[in-house]
Every structure is written in structure tokens, then in C-alpha cells.
Picture (cartoon, rainbow over the protein chains, first blue to last red):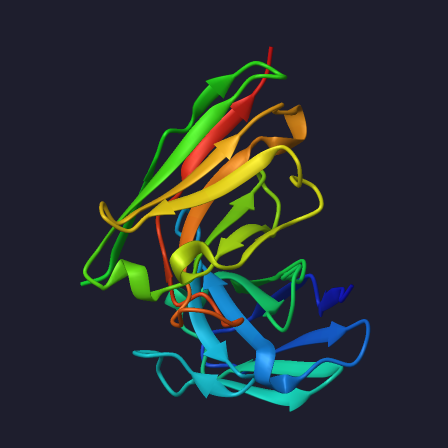
Length: 108
Length: 121
């Protein structure tokens, strides 16, 4: 069973800075089945990235995904107040479909 | 516009049962795998269950296997989660989420706003 470990737990940056979030899988996983979600406070999750690097419909190009098993990265360019959220990675290659523990992004 | 609206949450005693519903609109429901994901208060996301189109494939997280049952009614564009033998650790917001394909594994491209289930005596 795949376990996803996200780091850091919390990321506090100034507006305009770039955020780099990490997701590490416990075993070899296909990059075709790695997704990233954004969950703003009080809201449902929103799909940002699927297949490790493909942006979902309507997602601005300030969000980019990269990497291959076991290490994946979500980069958020030029942080804005609306980017304050918890970001989760998910592996969807096989049941169960684990999520990482999340990275909370804050604005200083 | 794709919409997923969950209902059926509430307060239930340990050992009790609850049936969640998810009303879907804005897309051809029968063509899509559907999923339940939950989030305990202040915690992260946990996948619960998935059902493919035509209910050919059904999967559960180990934490709910044997207690929860997922089903769908394509005639009414509805997804269900029957939850039995509820425990305190099942307390969470339950989200309904769509996958873009009829079968096989994929990311969840649309989510409902969730319904809160509280298990407490």
C-alpha cells in the first residue's frame, strides 16, 4: 500500500514569492496517477494537477507539477492571498487511493 | 455546470446507521465513476469508496469495509453511501466526488460541498 508524505507541513511566504511543495511516495508509483488538490478554508477540494504535470481545466499556469516516482513537486508561482489553502497530493493508481497529509500555505 | 450536492448527514449514536446521498447534475451521471472522500474535523482527506459506471467495480477503504456500502441510481442521477455500525472515528465531512471516466482510476475532477456526519452518544 502506497503512503504519501508531504513536506513541509506549513509553508509561510511573502506575497509574490514562489512556493515549492513536496510529495514523496513510499514505493515506486507511476507519475501517470499522481494528482494535486487545493482546499481553501471552508471549501471543498479542487483538482489542480493530474498525471503529475497536467493542469486541470481552468487552472492558471502559475500552478505547475513535476516529478516522477517516488518524488513529486507542486510549484505555485507568485503567491497571492487567494492561494492560502491546504494542498494535498493523491495517488490514484490502485485501491486504496491515498492522500498525503497536506501542506498548509500561508501568506506572511 | 457540473453540480454535486450531498445530503443525509447528521448526529447519530455509535452503532447507528446513516444513509448519505449525492445528487448530481450538469453531466451524464451514468458515464462516470463516482467516489466518497471524508475529512475528519481539522484533519486531512481520506478516500472512502468508489463505484464505476454500471456498478461493475466497487472498492472500499479498509477502515469502512464491511460496514459501509456504496451504490448508485443512474435513473435519478444519485450516489449513495449506506453507513452501518458507525463509530466515533467515522465523524467527518463526507464529500461526493466525480472521476472523469467510466472505469479505471483517475483523479477527482469535481467535488460537492460535503455533508457532516457526527457519531456521538
